[in-house]
Image (tube, rainbow, N blue to C red; front, side, top):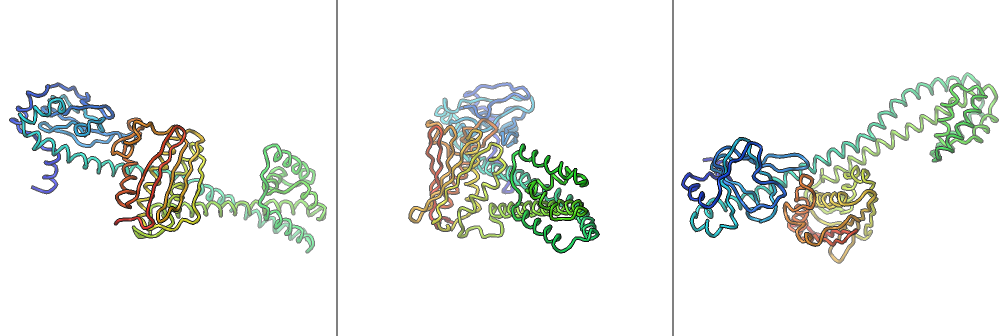
Amino acid sequence: MSAVAGRQETLFPKLAAEQILCLLAHGEVMDIAEGETIFEEGVKSETFFIVLEGRIKITRTFSGKEATIVIHEPGEFTGELSVLTRENNVATGMAIEPSKVLKIDLYGKLHEITGDCPELTTLILPALAQRRPDAMTLQNQREKLASLGTMAAGFAHELNNPASAARRSSSLLGDLVRTQQVNATQLCQLGLGRPELTVLREMVECISARRGIELDPLERSDRESEIGDFLSDMGVDDPWEVAGALVDAGVTTQEVHSLTEALACGAVKGALAWLSNSLSVQALVREIEESTTRVADLVGAIKNYSAMDRAAMEERDVHEGIDSTLTMLGHKLRRKAIHVERHYDPELGKITALHGELNQVWTNLIDNAIYAMPEGGNLRISTLAEGDCVLIKVEDNGPGIPEDVRNRIFDPFFTTKPVGEGTGLGLDIAYKIVVDHHSGDLSVESEPGRTVFTVRLDQHAATH
């Protein structure tokens, strides 16, 4: 027998006919129609079931989608982890064909059943106990995959904006460069002297240095009208298009008048066309530079976040990981108009840690804070050196965590989110990374309007 097959038999053993017969006296046989559920995710249950006929599918809602965990055949049993924890079911059991099950109230009759049917303790309970860590491992993997998928989608969205802007600007730039060549030829034909060319060059340099001025819509409209009317009277081709380019660059009406006074009447039209086009070319070059810089910054953020090209455990500034995480979650922050405050201790030294894992901690804490906060909420992240330790606090102004569940939020599978919106593993994963992998501490303080998660790490935190 293979190791895999042996493991499957341990996790999902089949009861023999005589073993089922022994248990029949302690339960109730039920007919289950196709599509009918025997237990539901998020609902408390203290029973477990033995499949007598048909098949029962076990599913769990994950990120809004149903995932199949296992399909139980006749002779197998299920009851989910609530049998052991006496908490709400973490999955749903549903018949995928007409079925018959034996329903047993395990807790109400546990002493009686174990006395009459010792197979329960030697076969059923060990299997259920082993399924719990296996289920947690599976859900941990699903949680990380879902987080990766969300990050990838957000990263693609973040990249798309600057990449599209750069592509659009480069396309327009080609046309403007060709137009600029024509305008330069026309300037040569106009026979402008050195003083006039110097005026044009100095104006371009002056306007380029100030990078334009932000105008409100009314001011912009007034300035375009003034310059457009003036250019129209001068006989400039496409006066309103030229006026728009000049206003975009921050050119004032007075500067346009000054330029026309410095040039011969016959040269004004060509000079303004050249000036307008030159400023438009420079604006597009800046847009391409800014867009490609944004792309490079995003790529740097994802490399930092995933700890690519780095050793698993190393000495690094913890602020880098936090900032990278905020960048990766930028689309969620903007969607809810969340204001982010950073209060970083400038004296904070580097820490030796598994920074790729710590970034998962920051992701879970910040993502939970975003979920909890209202539109326009305030997220405050602060760091503080305390002796040989580093404190990282993630604070939000959401509704707070109810006191009656506060001591359970780090438990696996526990979540205050609606069914399908949370796995109950994010904080469990964060806790294990901080406490088990870095010998640190993760705690929470909460009241209505203020929740603070505090991570305490030694500056040489990693344990492996």
